[in-house]
Image (cartoon, rainbow, N blue to C red; front, side):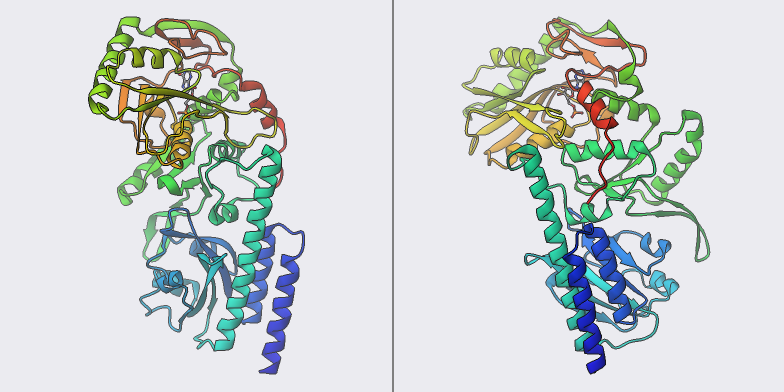
Length: 498
Ligand code: IMP
């Protein structure tokens, strides 16, 4: 026994030294996983973490597990050794027959016979577990479980340290505490790859990070075809957005080469009807980038205002109808209308002038990239009203991907309004990525870049009384003021992630 205890001490010392080193967190944890498996004579060790939905588990760091095992399917927190979430240690002697194992047949294929797992906590909150597997039947001793619990505690400290360092970096960058919703969960921290397969993926990640939307990179593969026990075709979507429960596949292939991918998508939808997935084609993706001021479309030359999409009369009719509806719904509630500057100024002015009830107004503004280093949305003009216990109507000019609105709604919700609803003049629903609740919608418009009635292209055309399409070589154009910094940002080599 003295021998194993000494070995354990050695392993803890090595793990603590790794933790105290300047290595990136993921490297530290990988070293710890490998050393832990070795010390316990186990075939594998993995650190499994909850995603932000708290329902699913993802493999954050591992040693000794095959690719097919790692992509076996969604790990349901309530079905994969569920007692871990109650803070209990779990030992499984025979994985093939134990009902607490979610995928016994996959475990058998991997040669896993026994499992030991302990909760992983950060400052007392359980964020996942540390698991080891053996290829032979094993009854784990108290000494083994104590050792693994010590290792898990060290992993918790490593993750906490990394979180603190990130908060510190962001504070330095923004000069104050960030208003950003906590998107950097342990799961996104650990699934962030050192490099992406394609630059488009990295660009997409910038955008998600900017809007505080948590993402996991390739956390799951879907079996599409199989022969007996053998999977013959898999599909691994690029991203999973836990808060939206949605997968995203980016395809930068030419439209003509997309057929195969489309086939896979159709098969996936047939086999897994509950899985929400969005395929962003090259064109969709370029349009998305163009809106933020970069990519080939944004670099094309603007041609000026094109066809009128909505006449002044059409707009006024819809604005009046919305004002009547709001006046009915908010009678006796003295609502506070919050307008998102600047595109909203025409709509807000007409809307409130047509409302027949007492109300207050306020405005907010956000910047896209006010400084070179801005990595997250900044609120450049905050509310002047206290919205606690107020009935708030957020007034928007246009909702496109929904990322801006999603951010603002999270921000407003944290200030405890009595109620919060969104009223938007235009809804470009086909481009939605984040499913934001829109209580009042003026007009749904197609996937075109529009200007006028407050909406701009490089600060121009806001004063048009109608809404028109922007005519461009590769339309759409980008909104104002963000192009240069986005381009600069894109040129900068992204630093290796922590
Ligand atoms: P989202 O975050 O993608 O929903 O973008 C919303 C913001 O993008 C709006 O508030 C506008 O500032 C801008 N935007 C989106 N589409 C257009 C457009 O067609 N014309 C002008 N601005 C647009």
